Image (tube, rainbow, N blue to C red; front, side, top):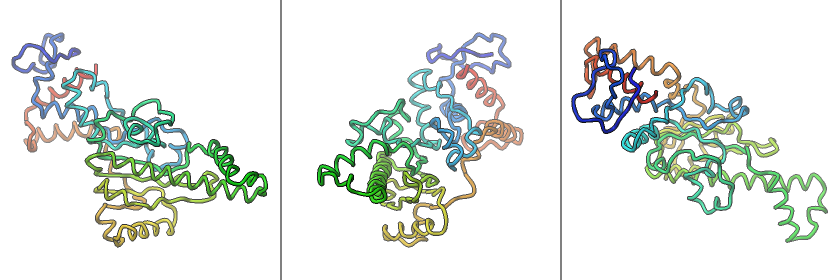
Length: 334
């Protein structure tokens, strides 16, 4: 079994597969592989379909974004720590080829929080979503419109003090029903502000997005008595996605909101759908092809191509390449 990786072994011919090498301690000179083979290795280890950020149990139960969560593999990010060259070659593959299922309040995480003055005094999240390079390379993103963790308890005290400063005892003089209406309206305004901040933050993906999932499954007010479907889609002009999936819309009225959103952009519904590849409540998920059996299927398909002599463009049709890739993967992950 090959277990050693080195970037600066003496130059020379590529080592044979460990299956044919009697010296199992000989280092596998991974960086001597052609760049196209190294990219195949990175793809095998880092492209898993969807990247999740520790969703809560209720998120997993209720949201389409987390359907079949356990069926997706975890990317082998230890690969990025091998050395600088491997990191520089592999990280763009990881960032550009996966769908990043972002958590609630993701603008408060690095690398986004430093981009917003509004976030200057907010509590930073525990870990970055990805490196700052992600702002240039991430192409596929999933976001949720939800009231989760919006800070309703904190806003209640703040609004009470603000109202009293303008009209002392105004809230004390209200009956319970009127006070509830007051705070309910304020909370919805606060929520709309946070959602606008969220979609504006998408503009920090400097090269735009290829696909964007927007999940409205939990787009309720804090009390759960109103649905709040965000339809200010002007940000799409900046983000320029080629495909937009609207998830969790409920009933005909919410679907019609999409038409009203298109009108605000000066587009008819058909033109809006065509321009951004809009799909409402899709039944199929194109990322499902990356579920757990992906590697077995890809390996089988590749070997079948070789046996049939049908290697595609840029592929070398000798079985040594397959064995070399298998050895490279093993050497980088053990």
